[in-house]
Image (spheres, rainbow, N blue to C red):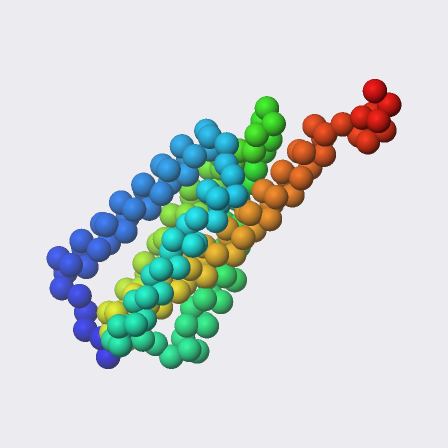
Length: 174
């Protein structure tokens, strides 16, 4: 059984998480002003994947069934609203992420649900194991979301390319 965090550490972690969420929301809003590309879409899950090294530390290790359940929970329940609210648009031949007020709201609702679940689970298992489970849950949320964004981006890129590329007959007749 895990021990509850001291209140000052718990408050610090909670405030830090909230600050990171606000920073992420601001970055997301600002990124809608600049065109995107495949690299910008796929770097977050690739960078985040280095966090799996925490499982080299024995006290963070969890059973495979817990890991699979956490990943599937993130993929099935947490990524879906993010996928639904992430859309692209073509402007002047470049692809931009559309701004969505619903996305920001959903982001904070998902954060609140995740924090409530975290507070419950941390009383049942060790803190490193809790961190591991919620890392896998977050990865399960981010990976399908970013893969869906990447596929949407590539489809839009292809359609955009088809519109600006002259038809074969037009190119050969001139």
